[in-house]
Length: 358
Ligand code: PLP
Image 1 (cartoon, rainbow, N blue to C red):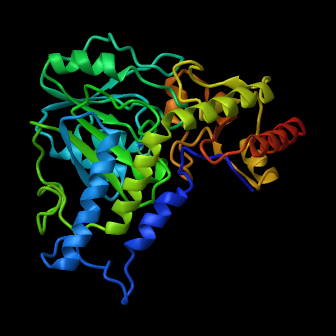
Image 2 (cartoon, helix red, strand yellow):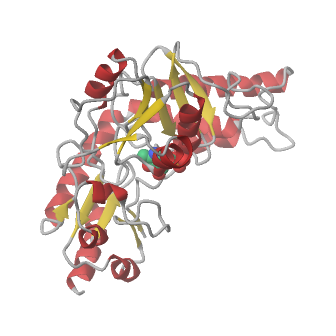
Image 3 (cartoon, helix red, strand yellow):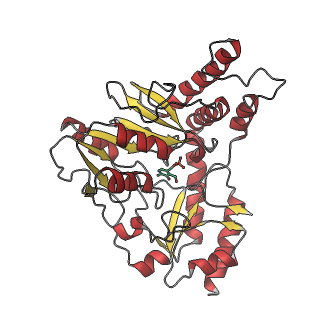
């Protein structure tokens, strides 16, 4: 079996797993304390959480605080519903966590910032001038394009806007967005555990509480934290930062080889302004469902579905100007730290052979 779906989730790093096991806390251990209890076991649990918070903070710029959440989706919702902004603008290719929270719940008339045929937003686009919250992601999850968030956010902040960046696909891989006011990340996209994310909030930015109760997480998100999940996230974040160059160099080798192998296929989105662990390709007339069923031992994603299983055509590929048949003949291959060149080559060969037999 070959796993080529690194944008959906990533394998847990052994180092993160190790940290987590310590804090799972069976009856004979002294590591099951509630991190919000004042006694000795509580204090050691909170120390683990705070160490994890320091490590997760390495993913962000200086000058802000980290709030743990249950996912990046939760972090994004906390930012959108907790801000005092009066208007919103979002890029056309945001993840459903941003788009649905905005358009369905916050403001159906929010401004949509378009992207060009390369999947890139125009950093110099004219912007509405009233106080607003602007959400633009760092790296797109479907096509891997890297948005010019630094240039855009620098302008926006000067104009008095509040900038939210979904950095789920870029965190630990790229430098953090320097001018964002809030940044959402998820542990499981960077070899940490599922079920934990974080919102980074720049000093001076105030949010309304999102989940009410015991007042944990600086009053914003009540509920008992899991020391095991936080510790796993912290270990994964530390490792991602330490291995950033090494991981990127490995991904570059995989990307170059994969581009060669799939030379007859068309790349969706910019090749240059892109995280190279994302290969979103289309082949005219390709029946993706059939390809998936013919290559069951290769884990990859249909490029045409934005939320797996939803059956909705990808709003991202459509925003690039692709026709519905083009979007439907697209697949997404995602690889990274633990993908070997041999595995990638063998999987690519299977996919290419099955596609040519259609
Ligand atoms: N934003 C992006 C770009 C994503 O790729 C994902 C997950 O697919 C999310 C947000 C949501 O992350 P989580 O699974 O932590 O809710």
